[in-house]
Length: 316
Length: 316
Image (cartoon, rainbow over all chains, first blue to last red; front, side, top):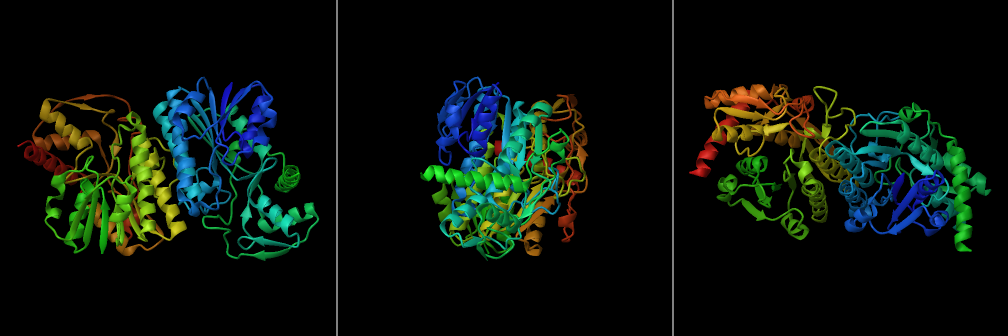
């Protein structure tokens, strides 16, 4: 299969690139390197089945050209900066919604018929049903990030109906693991590297979140495209457990051998649009036989290990 | 109140402009005249409380300037060409989604805090619950029009959360009445004016649709902004009845004194993304005391009367 991966130098994208190459597929990686990291593509770059295109998804001509002969698009590129949406409100619209439209139009031009899309549990806003199923009540958006991803989902679904495309849309919880580059584990590590004796925590520490290990996420995606065959295939991806931010802090402290003094910003939410409780009902993907291999604790441990080693390597 | 109406020269927009002026408000009308009609603003243009700005919502500087001192935005401008989305897929994205983002950003700049938005029952795609409530299961989009409107809803909701704006979002069934300029009544009239003896019908004629009279729609909007006070206020707007396309044809024939031979395109849907059954649960707006004054039959009769008289006037 000839697979096109957007956000190929990013966290999930680069892990997917390596996996696809190891499965014998030919892969074209596309990334504007705004947040992507060259070091994440080191392995891939040594493979002749891999081609890399550095460009932005808003450059339509380049995108159309790069999609020539592609069987499947894995669209992971996004502005994933969930917290700071209100500081640059156009970024989510451009990088998530308009960029996705460009991908779809370019696919149409190249007659490419299948797409995987990384959406987010944030499209559920602040749900009232837990665990939250894919068919929960029509949500109200609470963040520009969630709104821009829901908009992209809708575009993909409409293209499936109008232009005979097949889609696999995954609503992720926060993904953890090797090549993780932003989020609470990263923030806590950076803080503790600077001042090991204290830690500043957004919200009240009681926010309840679900996390998933990146390789489990990739397993689920590959299983879904193999087993599910509707026009539009929607899947939540997460674990059946959740943990409090405070629990996560305790695990990170345990790994680093630190017991910092905690200061809380206060409030139920870490930032505007933060959801105080995320737990997705993943029975749909489980029904296909998928199970996560790592618990949340194991995923957090793998992540803090990576963040620490990566920081040592990149600063050395 | 100083009210800013986008799509002011359109069907619903111009009716709202007249109503707002009659209630003593000061009104700024904004329209790019791509589908708007100058004759719909004839009454308004004679009022000193009315100002008209001819510009496109994508012209940000003009928009920001025009919003100076505005208390309330009534955002009706849209590409309302539901049927032909697949022929020009960028139009819905630009005119519905990006244009709405421009309105929101301009409101933010001008510290304007309240917005009414005309969304559509099409955001429900092909629902499985009838009548369909605002909180029905998270839908899958089936048209670019529906997707672009859902995207706009999400943006508005996120701006409410992030920037302390208050919104009133209305999901309309098809609206009928004076100044109606496109849709099935219009198409049927035009066909019958050309060839009174036969009529070509999209789909199989059994599509079941709900319609609402434009003045009832305006009553509902004005009641909602008076009585509802959440940050995000979502309302379905429609009647509790529906009719088959065939029934509608019979009424139109009755009014015109014609019994055309009917030819059907066939299939359950009139076009790609058409929903074969639309019936919205409007108990939320009814709970505020609103009731439509016209039945579907009366609304269709008022519409065909207008279409006929308007055609006579504009061609004379």
